[in-house]
Length: 227
Image (tube, rainbow, N blue to C red; front, side, top):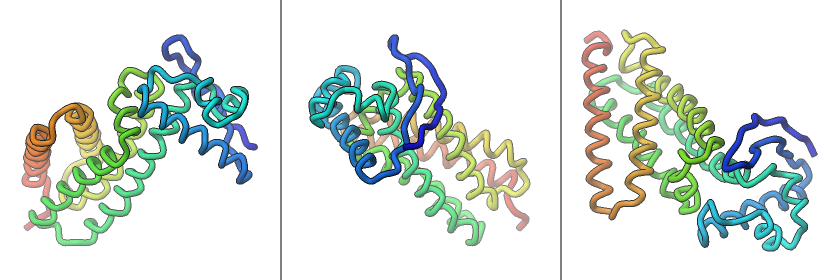
């Protein structure tokens, strides 16, 4: 079993992300998966703040020491749950947005790529109620705030790469900075709207799409390709 040193921090008096084991053998991977699945069930039942590692141990029928072989504590488990979904979103962004680099850089394609970006974020956020619960409260946990920032920057680079062809006159770092703000705005809006009724949620997200579209359209007009 390979052990990877992870950055340390504090959350509610607990040490977080001290050491995490990366299982190689199938049996170990299955045990790690059972820990996460049990944690997810507890999160749905009592929320991310109220479950204990002992409850997870009882769920999987193992001593609590088994959990510590894979996770240093609850924060590490919450991070692992979130990481799976964020990795999937990043993979989807790379796959779905890459196609726009090879198409015409006209206004129609520009509108489509913006729509696709928002759709991918919303789909990732709403696909799993457990992730939605964990990520809705992410700003309360140092471990998840750190993950959020790291993920936002990575996604921003992917998005910047995909729309760079629409604004070739803009400096790349400026474009990345804009995309960081876009990713953060989308994430914040999705956390906010998770507590709303569907009609209200759709209205807020529609306004968000309009704001992002207008901002990027101004960039497109100012820094777009030569006609």
